[in-house]
Image (cartoon, rainbow, N blue to C red; front, side, top):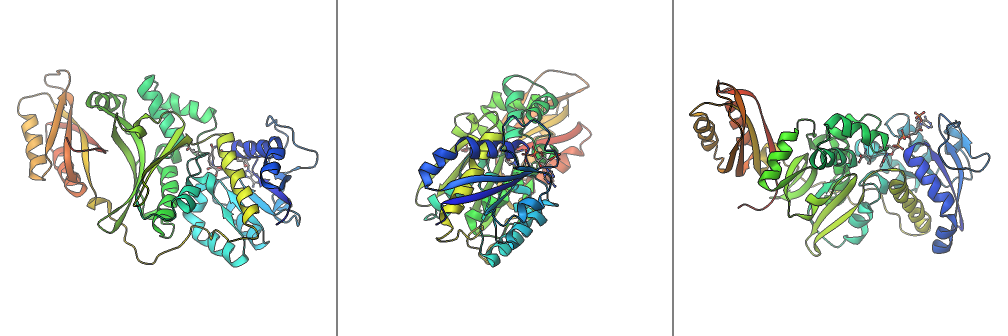
Length: 431
Ligand code: NDP
Ligand code: HSE
């Protein structure tokens, strides 16, 4: 095994800065622990004049990513610039130059990872992507190593720090959605395009990776159902609280009757569940294995240092494995799997109807729900606006998504319903 590993970083932004800081400030600690000296040789960024709050040795900074990819001394190239192009080409070129690569870029891994892993295997190098899911939580290691002996029953994750931060601010401090998003951006949590965070796209990228690791399926981003948090109002958060729930953007992958579910959507979670208490930028991933039972992993899901911690862990792991067994990208890939269609899932549901405040409306709505085998668990109606519309909230027992879609379509066509119905899937035990 080499006792010196040279590292090059492309992208000196939030995560690049955290990674560089850890490599520089904890160099001696990591050397003592591993017997390997990790030397930060080059950092490439378009802007090398900006003050990043850390002092890097002379000659490390460059504006040319090629100076990292083509440096014969560099063993590990760390891609932290984000986006698909040119990040993908940079990674593939590094791999073709027989360099190991590490990335935090979940969009790239989820959408182009199959090709990148194949190329890495051809060239006998590693691809580390621990930082791509749940920031500082070592969840990739958990699934690949710690729980390798288990059939995975289900994975539930709060895995987007920005949307969890926004929902928490809206719930606890009654902050407006747009103000909470601005604050998450200022803190460096949000993606370059924050619609990735709030529309569930980033969560779906991460879920793609978790599903592949859990069930040995190819990275299948296009098969993930995704819905973000933009339709959730302060009123829904209040109704949920009154019913004993928190609203979280949840990523779910599980086996249902031999089919794999992969879905991202706002979800009402009972207050007494540990995961409902995961607030702010924190993430949590619940994994159930057939041997281990329930496990839960918690930590900061975004930010410079937590993500840098995961990036450096990958660099160290790769150096340690360099003369050992290769981790082989996403793991085994089975050809025999089926992904469940969203219409086929079953869940409990919260509905917020915009109903005219007049006699007989509830019976019209409940009649349609009944026709589709959706049975009501509880109802809330607040305020009176005779002749106007009021929110009518219904909590329903387990129903089929297909029936819910049909019922909502029919209800939204009633003359007594003035706006589109919002529904949120509900986790927990049936009352
Ligand atoms: P930033 O925008 O803060 O940093 C990216 C940096 O890369 C910027 O400084 C950018 O320069 C630079 N860059 C862009 N193009 C090039 C290029 N061609 N050559 C060299 N440098 C380039 O992003 P983050 O650090 O937040 O995110 C980086 C990656 O990590 C993304 O994939 C993101 O999804 C992922 N990630 C982010 C987390 C976070 O908490 N922020 C957590 C986990 C993962 P310029 O600004 O001038 O364009
Ligand atoms: N934008 C992402 C988030 C960064 O908020 O979770 C971490 O992947």
